[in-house]
Length: 78
Image 1 (cartoon, rainbow, N blue to C red):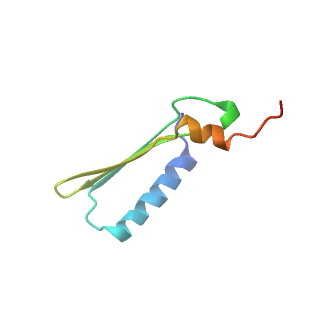
Image 2 (cartoon, rainbow, N blue to C red):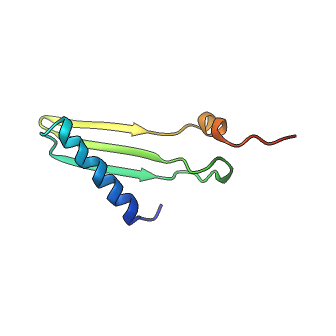
């Protein structure tokens, strides 16, 4: 998806909160992707957060699955 100032600001705002939990974070990288466009199911994003910490890295991923997307889709008659 094209870069968005609003999304970048929100990511920075949320990343700053991580410092409250662990002050030794040395880096934070956030990747947000829209791998497929399912207009009838809404926007579903893949998010990957990589935190640099002493002696390593912590990686958190969220990848929506098709089943959950279909569950959230509005029901159609017929």
